[in-house]
Image (cartoon, rainbow, N blue to C red):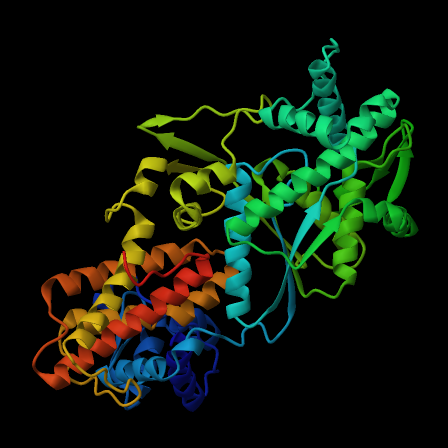
Length: 543
């Protein structure tokens, strides 16, 4: 809808001979109108005019059958108020083709890769991983809605020290079960799941324990990693998250891609030796200092394999790469971006979303957790206790780089204070309206031809306007990579609906008004359903 309002102003600017570029936004307060623009303030200096005078000139030239009023505000803002027919026409289009409402051509079919979760296969997913899963999956859905071709990828860190430590941890627990006292690795994994794996190893691969220690550890590392990865896949499936590809880190080494990436950097004179290690001159591209890519013992660092992985991504032809990482990886952002820029891929190819920590609250008290000590709540446990929908919705109630307190008791409650219940209840409530109509023998109107003119109440038009903001929201979320804005929007929309429903009947005797109100709530329901789908949350018909 903003784009259509912008076109009206573009036509005015073109007639005045002062350009055709204009940005339209929604005013913070509806009392200022339906749309606002600062185009006069932006162009005034270039044209040698005062902003207010230019704004007046533009306003006086506005002549459109759908514009009710054009006004100058403040130092030169232009506010537009649209006629009811403007909103009725747009709402009728929604009712005619609800499945495509909000679908955009913004992406023009360009390829985007969203890589998220990518937790090491050394333990079950914890709630922090779950928040990243909710963000990454919802963002992928939104980008698809905006017209991008999206690929979801999970990077399996199955090479390196952490997998070796998993093998050492399982082996140590196996020895303990055999009654042998061995030292547990200082940096080992101490969760109960390691004991469970050791017990399973006795049943499934008992011959491994007769192998020499190092060979047994390597075998248990591979076996344990595969078992954990299957558990991760099961948890994600239950969470409503799917991936198009699972890329193993080891493939980077098997295909010699790490060495090839380093050779490319070296060919540009960006690697140098110092103190027996090989360094990447990342400080030339915005990093705060140079970074080691090959240690003194000849082993590549994690940065080396990460560079190789992102070079491979770039070569796979993606227009945009989106990585969803834990906030503790923030230091890697400038390093990977530096490598991509150094190799000629630009500084805009990669965008990184950082996921902040989640604290669990139960009974008013914060649950103590320590990943290092193996004391944490898994994603699977949280989903089992409060349900997939509540977890996914709650994880997106704040911007991903902000800390989140997850109140378990609130997420399980059936009250308007529980945001997911409040939104889902609106969808179920509207379904109930149509069930009641069917029970009473009230015919469902033809949505394509329903007359909306009987909707004269201020709150009815306000709801209509809120519904019609949905496509603009999709565009904003896709451009800014901010899926959390959808939960805010849905909450505001259903709050307006619940308030309206509590004060006004829908199934009236007056047929024209009844059908218009049925059309209004039908539009609300369609947008709520699609919004919940983009969040990976169900839209129930009964609650």
